[in-house]
Image (cartoon, helix red, strand yellow):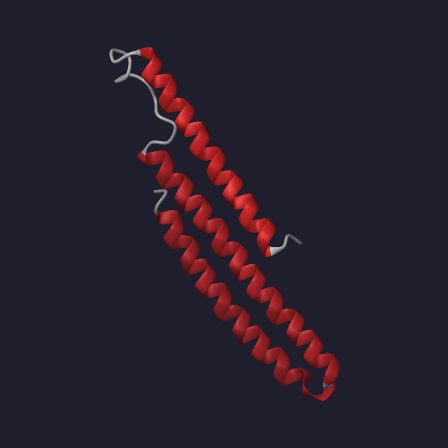
Length: 117
């Protein structure tokens, strides 16, 4: 599992790489001259940015929901190991909480993917 610092470094590297690629694309557009500038494609147009944002948002939502449900499951198993007589109540609370997280995750994924459509 990546540490928080390594995750931020990886995200920063991705953003920096995208910025450098966009800078290279703009520099090559400037070298071609003004006549071909109107016909050239850009690195990331509005449609591409919309799709990229929706995809990244959906991925982050899924990772957050999975982390939340994983923490609930781990805590529930640990609680059942400490107090086996309360396993029924713990299981019920775990299922209800996981369902609520899953519902919120599904709603968030639908909202982020609406940006793509």
